[in-house]
Length: 208
Length: 208
Image (cartoon, rainbow over the protein chains, first blue to last red):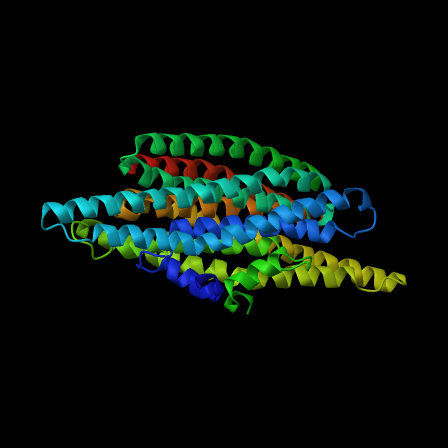
């Protein structure tokens, strides 16, 4: 599993000319880092004197951010599988009509997966962004900047995942699905951009 | 070395209630991922047929992005050391005037390091952002989205590092240094925000 390899090796692989891991994997990991930082603010705040009133809410938030962190971490492998599947479909033989038709079908099937995977990543990142406000408002002031880092990471990961939807959706023959996917991404981007900036300002304000 | 540990363990540590690694370490790693993705687009493009004219420029860009990746990766340990140093200074005894004065001096020394470290991270991230345009313009179209992911990662890492400057600079008694640090961060943020959005749009345009 690639996420069990050392961080420096992951960075080496990202920098290399090999096609994977690429931007889709980076987006999933950056989103997972965002979720991890939100969990951290919850973990530091829960049990801290003077923060009893927010404890049960922050426990609920932490359950969500930990679920999202696990989901985003597992998406690294899904991104690589989707990319490899699409590349394998493009490499299928096309010497005659039957082969051409089988190849075209395989490409469409894999394009769908290569659109759905970054779309799922974008959705999870948007969920991380939407969790951040409660943490930025209620988290212990001493670590509140980490909520700001978390929301920025999640929003930039969402925008990165969106790029992979833009790449793959246009080639889909199922136009209804492609149009719906593009519209969903635009809506996620729009909401998250506004929310992440609002939370970032809230955090800056709490830094004094 | 923390960056030699498995990626999933790094995420676990980030999510835990332990004070380090925190947002400063995450910023350095996200910046390093941005630099790695720029290197990747260079590595894929260099040697590719039809891209001979941009090869020498992209080799020069890759030298820079790899230098910045190494620098940002090493900043994770520096961030942890700066944080630990500051916490140790706050824990120094303060039973009498001599101890109080020694403690105040140690705090100032470590606050300076805890301001300089994220400032250096912000500078390196801004350099990554400023490299991205040449790659977005000249890189192989098949991986150009990764230049977009790289520039977004670097800019969000810069903004994250800035938060740590905001936290530590106000408590510095050396006001001239603190003011200069804050002004430099604002200038880096301003330039990089504009440049990263311009490069992101350039990439979106090249996706067709």
